[in-house]
Image (spheres, rainbow, N blue to C red):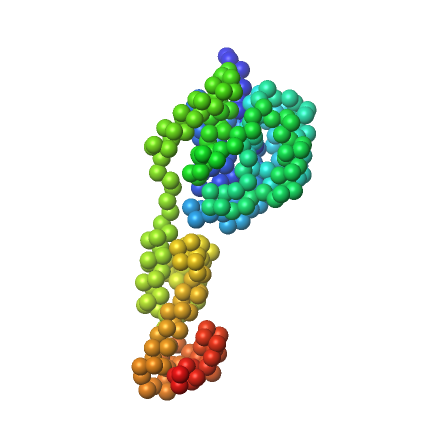
Length: 294
């Protein structure tokens, strides 16, 4: 039986599966290789972008790599997201010790949404301490669609593993990515649909409920995800949208009716005229009585 010789990917995890270790494993497997992995960071992420990072400790990263390398001896290593100086140095120490035949580094510094992922300090350490151990450093500016740069590097790793020269491997990987781009439709979430649903609910409930959690519960999503959606589409958090809808209706009532301040306060869900005045002053910088006179 032929001895299994896997490809090791060292990178972060992408919850959507569009990039990171998930995409590496899928690409390597699709092209006939066998992938093993060491995860450097875990992301809270969806189609709207990265919410939070949880960087694993350098010792945990080193432990993952050494467990695989000691047992399975991968000769091709693909490196992606490294976010801390300690993690970079842990990876370097393993490369120094085990000398894999090929080390492919695919820099991951900015997300597909433009989020900065790596500090300048870490970039400097990578350049000075890790790059000398890399066979190839792939600048992947051509492949801006989410995950394609990552998949390109993984494809290069597979073709190197299969015995191609670096130039042959890059050529085959480019052909693979072109085919992917033709077939792919970038992963889309339900943000637009959810935003329209939220706006309809605001029209329905703005008089009685300004609590974001209420709207999120009604739509069976988290308040955080709802905020991501509204910020991505309108540039505003959901509370600002609710409050703006409410203040416009209060302004209309002040201009178009002769109702008292107390009546308007009760009509729009305030327990007293004082709370109406406080809200109006916060939103418009003046009390409602002054707005009415003006």
